[in-house]
Every structure is written in structure tokens, then in C-alpha cells.
Length: 378
Image (tube, rainbow, N blue to C red; front, side, top):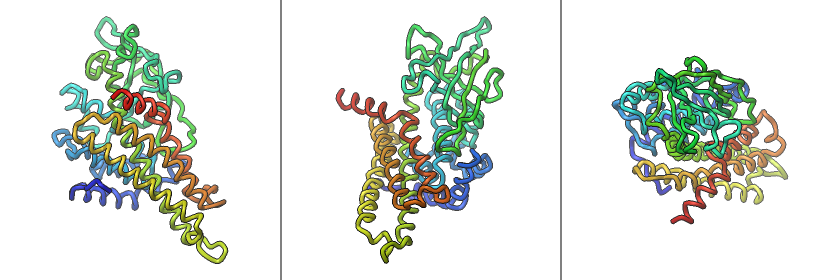
């Protein structure tokens, strides 16, 4: 790989690998069957990894975007669900890091660094990819408080989150520029947690509907300023897309390693299937894709770490890595033959987990619009 990690990054990588192997991977099947494992997440918090990229003044380690990408990448080799939960918590809390007032940073970032879970509420039943069409409203009352009404759908970490960053319309006449962002603690009156979604995959992450029934928020719950919500959300998704690319890499690598072990053990026609050219060609294509996926992911992370705009690089990495991850997981299932179709083998779960990566944080179709519009506009 062209990316050269520092000694500190290599040390963190090795620490995450050890934690993932011992603690995370053995719990992934359990989470698929039972849901989010709070006890496992609490053990992750004790490692300090949840605060790896937050500034030291807020209790973090002060590392860069490359280092946080390493953490997500390595965790996803044991559980894509756990990596996704951490990714979304970072996406939401980073909105405070980059756009919050000093008072908001002082209050919430130490909590994020220690591992409090954050969620990001943008998507609604009638506003998925077309995020500017959200219907949730926030209106000021006579006391200057905000009153929110509406709801959200498909919110990762909802139901287990300690804090929510919610998007709501504060001035409908301005369209996307009339959307504002609000910080909402889980105990806020009027915040209603709906049903848990019975998902195809990523079942170890919690996903619920949210509704807001005259939910009142103090003036200082407004993140940044009125009308900044859409910009905050789009910038947050840029970083989240790098993490999704990293999850794609880790999940695909995990599937690849299991398929490789199986191919060397499974005997057909008098020899391991790894000796058959048809199987070797599959591994050749997958290995090539994995190298490209890793390079694109860490290139995007490096651009972000340098402080440059990374919308294009993040979109390209997320598009390529997520689609290739699904195909690699499918090939690994195929290599397992009939066994791969059984829940007794992990690759069946990996196929189900992988598909979300092509949908969440911007569908592949939306990413193609972002990429096409960007390159044609240059």
C-alpha cells in the first residue's frame, strides 16, 4: 500500500486488531441474533478508542482522520455492526466538534470521547436520498424555546443513543437553507423511540423510528446557527463515507480470509478446491479489489486529515468499496458452496451485512450523481 502509517498508528492498529480478535469477532453472531451488545461497546470504551480523534483538551487522543479510519477498518474485521455504531456516533458528535459553540464543545465532546453514543437524525419516511424534503419542523415559542414536531426513520443508534443530532425545518421558504440542526439528549420530553427495525443485515446495530411530539428544546440546543443544518449534514456525510469505505474493506477482508481457509481445507476431485483454477481466479480478482479498496479508503482519509475538502474522494471510495464488498462477500459465499448458504457459516451473515453499505450514508446512485457532477464541473 502507498499509505505509510506512523509508529503510533501501527501501535493503535495492532491494539484494535487484538481487541477485535478477542472481544469483537466472537460476539458478532450473537449480535446478529440478539441486537446491539451494550456490554461489548462498554468494553470498547475502556480502550480509549472511542475518543481517538477528539482533541486532547476534550479527553481524546488528538489523532487524525487516518488513525480513526484504522480503528473503524480493524473493528469491522470482527463486526461490521459494531464498527457502524461507532462510525455513526462519530459522524454525529463530529458535527459538534466542527460546528458547535465553545460551550457546546466543552459540554458534549468529553462525553463523546469517553464513549457516550450519538445518533444522527436526517432521514424521514418521505425524505431519504432527497434530504432537503424533510418535514420535521422546529418553531420558536414565546419563551425562545424550540418546539419540534415530526419524525425520523432508519436512524442508526436510535434506541441506544445518549444524544441525537436532529435536522428540522426552521424556515420552509428557504428550502435546504431553512434546515437547522439541534442537539437532543435522550431523556428529552417529547422524544419518542419507535419500533426497532427488523433488518436484513447489520442487525448488531440498533435502528429505530423516532417521533417528536411538541418536543421542547432550549435556545442553546441549536447547533451552529439557523439554516446551517443541511450544510452540517452534508459535511458530516463526507467523513461518514470514508468510514463506510473502511467498513467495506474490513468486512470483505474477513470474508476473504474465511473463504481462503475453507478453500484450502475443502477437498473435491482429490484435491483442495484452492488448487482448481476456477477458484484461484476468484481469489485473484478479490485480492486485486481489496488492494484497490484499501488504497482508495486511506487516500480519502489522508485528504481529510490534511484539512482539504474530501467530498469527491470520500464519494469515490464509498461507491467503489461498498459495491466491491458486496461482490466479494457473494463470491466467498459461492466458494463455500451449499455451506455458504447456511447460517452455520459466517459468510451468510456477511452477505446480509454488506448490502447496507451500498445504501447507508448515500446510496450508490446518489454517489454517482455527486461524483459525476463534481468531475464534470471541474
